[in-house]
Every structure is written in C-alpha cells, then in structure tokens.
Length: 237
Image 1: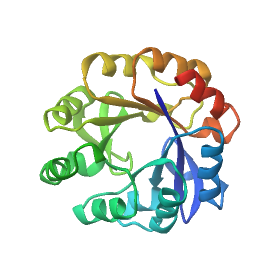
Image 2: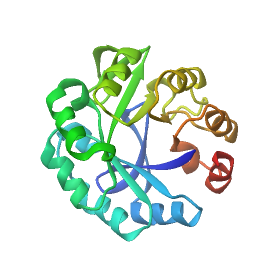
Image 3: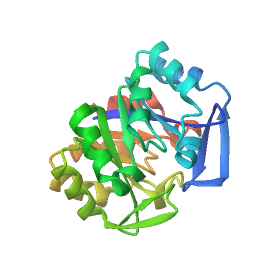
C-alpha cells in the first residue's frame, strides 16, 4: 500500500483544516517545499497536495509551489482543489504533476470528467468526499444527491481508475479512520482506492493495508507527531 503524506496549501503555506472548516485552520509551515523534502527524506515516494484556495476559486493560486514540489523532489505528486476546466488539468500536468484529482466537477460536469478520463486515463483521479453516506461537494458545504455507492459505481463505469475517499467526519479529528467504509469499498470496486480522513495510528495503516487498499493519506497525524512516517511506510508495505 502506498502512503501519501499530505500538504494542504493556503497562501503558499502548508496548513491543516479541521473537518474542512477554513475558520479552523492551523499553519504548520511557510515553506511547503521543505515539508515535501522532509517527506522524501523519511522514505515517502508520493505526496498528496490540495490547493485550498483553488477549491474555493477554481483557480491555481498555489501553482508555483506545486510545480516546485513536483519538479524539485522525486515524489509522485497528485493535486486536487477546484479543478473544473481542462485548461487547469493541462496546467498541472504541464507543471510535472503526476495525477490530477477532480472533486466537485466530477459530480457536476460529467462531460468534462469523461473527456479528462478519455484523454489522460490514469492521470485522473476522483475525490469521493462522504458525509453521512452521501457525497458532498463545493468544499464539503453541499450535498450532491449521490450516495457514496451510487457515485462510486458511476465513476467505475466512466473509467476512473483511482478513487480517493474521504470520510469528512474523521478528517483532522484524530479519531481513527472509518475502516468499515474502506472495507466495503475495497470489496466492491476493482479500482485503486485511497483512504483519506482520520488515518491517525499505525494500527489504522495496518488495517487498511490488510484490506488490500491501494493507498492511504496521512495528514494531521504526521504534523502533530502522532504517526512516524518512516514507520507508517514500513507497516504499509
């Protein structure tokens, strides 16, 4: 299983939100590139990036630092946050990003999603952000009308190869990850499933690996010292 340590970007800094709330933001570093290099030093092979400003605006305000992380480290870099147009996908891929994550646009613009998947294949992932069994959109502020299962089934039919599933209620809460949710997804869908939200112990990592998941994202647990990244990578193997 691949471990994706996370860097959430806001005004050029590495930050973390509590359950997606911009009013509950903690700044951990003003130098995200150094954070990415530390991930690499500790044995990471990949990094999960989110442009929190882009998630609101649909623009790419943190593109310069994203590009530096993609080009100046050896990490496989994936990016999400407000990617709603093909031009934005192309901008990130041209900046040496390896995979682009579509969130709200995957729900609201089926034609764009299908076009992106047809053109870029495995370079396109979809974020499945779940609250109370339903998919949330627009920065987790609105319900989409899709259940998690109905949406995942549709994504698989459309050819999406990687689903990054976040249990919003666990994100940044340090209460452990929703193992039942990921067990269900792993058993039901033959695509790459990445667990996100609440991965806060080596026991979480071990349990997810045993389910056969493709990946797990570690965020706040690394920043607070609750998880040793090197140990988590070893447990995930």
